[in-house]
Amino acid sequence: MEAKTTVQERIKMVCDKYFGGTILKMSKFVGLPYGTVNGIATGKTKNVTSKTFDAILAKLPKINSDWLKSGKGEMEIGNDMPSNVHIIKYFPNVTCNMGNNDTGSIFDNNSYENMIIPGYSDCQYAINATGDSMSPLIKPGNIVLLSAWNESFIEWGEIYLITTRNGYTTIKRVFPSQKEGYIECRSENPDNPPFDVEAGENLLPMYVVKGWIKHN
Image 1 (cartoon, one colour):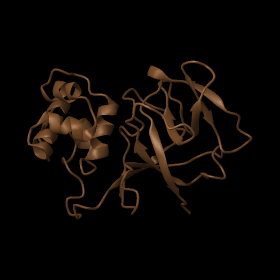
Image 2 (image 1 turned 120 degrees about the vertical axis):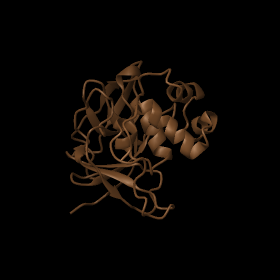
Image 3 (image 1 turned 45 degrees about the vertical axis):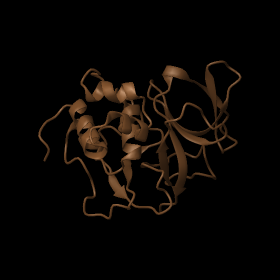
C-alpha cells in the first residue's frame, strides 16, 4: 500500500517511473501541454482536471485510476499479467444516462472490473448502454467500449459519449448545429428527434464510442 500522497506527488511519481523524471517526455507521450504537466509535477497547479487524468490513463493503462486520483491502492494494476496485455476498465454501475458529479468524470468514485478484449487496445473504459435511442445499432444491455477524446476537433457523424455540467449524459452521433456554439446530437432510432447541446465550457470530457458488445 502506498503512503498517503497528494495527486501532484503521484503524477510526479508516474513521471519518475515511466519517463525518468523528464516532464517534457511525459507531456509529449500523454498529449498534454508541457506547462500543464510541469505545473502539476512541481506543485504549482493545485487542481488537476479530469481531462488530465483521462490523458494519463489513456496512454498508461496499467496505472490504477483509484491510486492516481485518490491515492487508494497500488500504482499499477495487473502486475501478474504480461506487459503486452491491454486492460479495459468496465464500470458495471455506470450507464450512458447516469448523472455526473463535481469532478467532471462519470468514472470517478465508481468501482470497476478489468476486461481484456483483443482488438480494442485504443479503449480505456466500458459501460452499459440503456434506453433505445441508438437502436437498432446499440441496444439496451450492450457493453459500450470507449476511448477518451483528447483531440481539439470532433469527427462529425461519429458516435460519442457526451456529458454536460448539469448532469446530462448520452450516447449520440454528433453533427454541426445551425446554432452557433452548439453541437447537434442525433439518435439512430427515428422516433427520437435530434437536439442541440451547448458546446464549450458546458461540455465535460467526451469519449469516442469505439464499439459495443452484446451482453446476454
